[in-house]
Length: 102
Image (cartoon, helix red, strand yellow):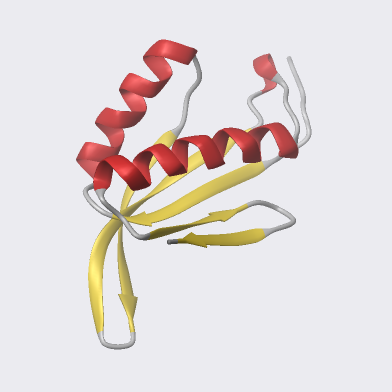
């Protein structure tokens, strides 16, 4: 059994979840790693839109820390934002929620 501290980091972004999954597949084919891609629907004042949530965990065989996972999330989120033509995204960790926008 391998044990580590629990750390979850999530990217929240509007856009096509299937395209996001394909971009993540290509990203991690080159650098190694694993994330979850969950389709979601954002409902807000004045409308709604489809999107996705990218999930990171502190995976025990490859123990990391929150700062490293956040940096990885920021790099991937920026790639997704550009490739999917999005204006903004939010990254949530156990200690911070940060929204990035143009």
